[in-house]
Image 1: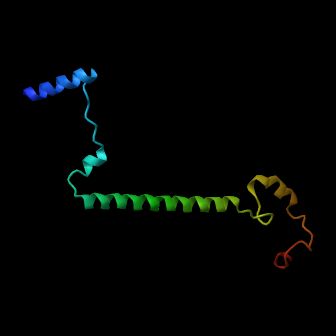
Image 2 (image 1 turned 90 degrees about the horizontal axis):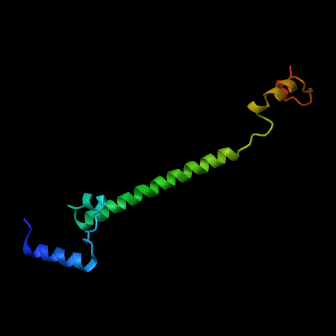
Length: 105
């Protein structure tokens, strides 16, 4: 049932703007925290901030480790899979002077 005051308010809104004014939507986050006190809301906000900060720190650490290992080079000491043919050709052609002491027979 619509009261007279509500009708008058609706007519006033329609005549002033030509459209009905809509109430601003309440976000889902605000609805989820509706029954909590201000202190509890602040606590949940801070916990969310701490979790985001920890997540960003772990992502940054993972990125640093990936960058470190991507830039690390082993030089000529380690055979590389994409030089397989070159490694096969060079195999066994080292002189005795180029070998390490424990490799000599």
